[in-house]
Amino acid sequence: MSETVRTRFAPSPTGFMHIGNLRTGLYAYLFAKKNGGKFILRIEDTDQERKVDGAVEMVYRTLETAGITYDEGPDKDGGYGPYVQTERMSLYKKYAEELVRRGGAYYCFCDKERLESLKDENGVHTYDKHCRYLSEEEVATRLAAGEPYVIRQKVPEGVVSEYEDMVFGKISVDSADIEDGVLLKSDGLPTYNFANVVDDHLMGITHVIRGTEYLSSTPKYNLIYDAFGWQRPKYMHLPPIMKDATRKLSKRYGDANFEDFIKKGYLPEAVVNYIALLGWCPKDNREKMTMQEMTEAFDTDGISKSASIFDEQKMRWLNGEYLKAMSADEFYTVALPFIDEAIGDAPYNKREIASLMQTRVDILSEIPQKLAFLGEFGEYDLNMYTHQKMKVDLSVAKRAVEVAISALKDFDDWTDDAVKERIRLAAEEAGMKAGQVMFAMRVALTGAPVTPGGAIEMATTLGKKESLRRLAFSLELISAKA
Ligand code: GLU
Image 1: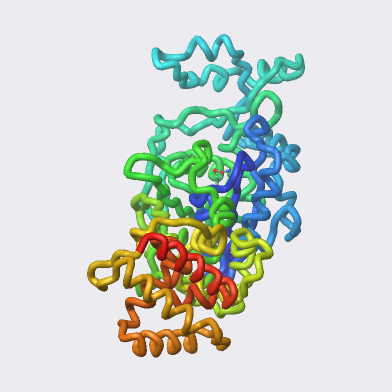
Image 2: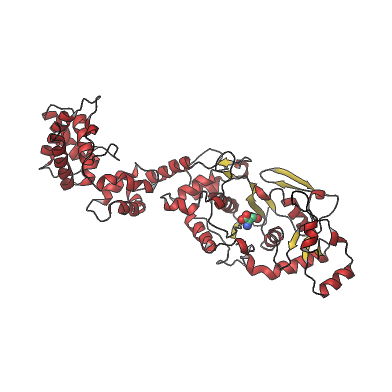
């Protein structure tokens, strides 16, 4: 194959981008890059009624955040523009008229009432090809008289339209089952059915990669390519992503919005990695991959024919793997906004907190809740001190907290290792188990049943002053009861 591979992503700006849409873009990108080709962004905005303000900007933002870089697009001219459908209006009309001349389409003057009358009991109408048989003279007269018209596809009769899909194999549709559908509407705007063909052809698209909802319409589009005498592209249709066994992800229901995940503290590269695996598996079954690694490994054989289910737990896990693999500095940078959210400008060592959090969260938005112990500290349930297995009760806890206080009050080497050793020795001297002291100390420092780390980490995170303040408070609380 000597021609340069050209793929495109053609989102409609009708809302946010759910991860199913983004996956389509990602695969088109990976396929182009794998084959040394070009990846093109086209904005399909002809459906002005469904257009949502800000949605085009969201497409740019999302692709940029996701690291899916296009070679050509509305703001990157590659000589095949314009890349926004509403800027291509004059082209569609011109090509629709040319298709009429070539015998692949015809003018239709049927009005609403007539079309209504063709509806069956389910309210569906199939056009009866009435205008297909008008004489040329009649068409010319009616056009000259300014009658409103649409242009319809003249589907050849008695043929089977077939193609080989790269994922689904041979797809064929009998032309008897294809309606003479509208290509150009009475307002001069194209339908998707027409625009996708004209655009893909004029933009030199070699491989059309999109969702399975277009799998069975593609034979119809191919008949348009044939009627123009254009070369058909190759096709790769992608199975849907489901939110459960029966329902597809849908932006209409607010499902799985890429930008929401990023706001929740997912890393874009982890989300992109995860969605790549929804419907594709590399030969060596690897899971964690950079964009570069995915590009190298991407192959059509690994694409599944069946739908995949979006599993946020799995994506969380993968995100956690990304967080753990970061350097301390990288993690600090991404975690800082979430740490700030939790502690504001309270005088804690944020780097210390970040290192405590790095192995303990799967997504960054878990941080504030895990740091709740740094905030309010007051009365708490003393039953937390009872631990039968460790043989701790309230009186043992009282001794343990006393041991901790006396061990730490004049101690200044406030690092994990040093504090730990200090407590271990103090416990030994007091004839207690280190585990008992640390258990009671953790509760005394936090007043919480679950904490993001043990006694030592809590102490170093809180700092010396706050730790001693809390231990003293807890000792009073226990003493009142014990
Ligand atoms: N604008 C269409 C959509 O968002 C794109 C279909 C295609 O890729 O041809 O579904």
